[in-house]
Image 1: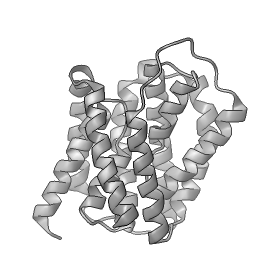
Image 2: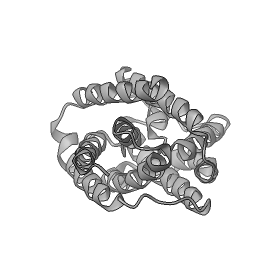
Image 3: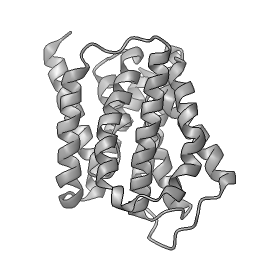
Image 4: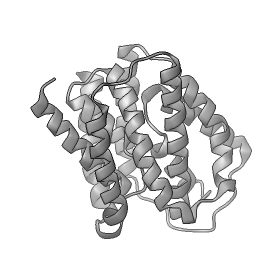
Length: 242
């Protein structure tokens, strides 16, 4: 292990956790980007992203708890959590993993550039759309080591199924559940966990706490999202064409 490189990885995890927590997310795509740029193997990236996601999602879930609405959460979570377990159990071949995650990183970057819809009267999600949407996001989350919030939040907003703060609260709990299920599936497959997890845990907790407490109140969200999108584009390109 190159410890100078690992120190940069810790700094990157801290920064990603702070930036993502400031906009109500847990940061899996950002952690994947940092570890990809550092040259970590897919077998390390997936479980580490899930574990870091769980820690920061806990903070985000607590922060946005006053805005949480069960009736907007359960239709997506019902099938998402078991399928995230299934996705976590199976390991995609390295080339498939690279292409899949690289595409997700680029889609995430594009999503960050899209304008957010204005507030309006939120409608109740319909089961015909919510159940398959949650199932697909859950399976993808488990396979790739992400929490799915980067997809669920814009879906809730653009479909007018939740207002902004409620969408953040629902997505935070969704990310937490998906990440837990995905990690349990990974462990159930008797796959090894990274031995250097604890220092990155500390970096994620410190960054997530700072972002949740300060970043969302003082930093312009659009500036943060532009910076994050640049990192995602670079890391996605490294996976797709490296």
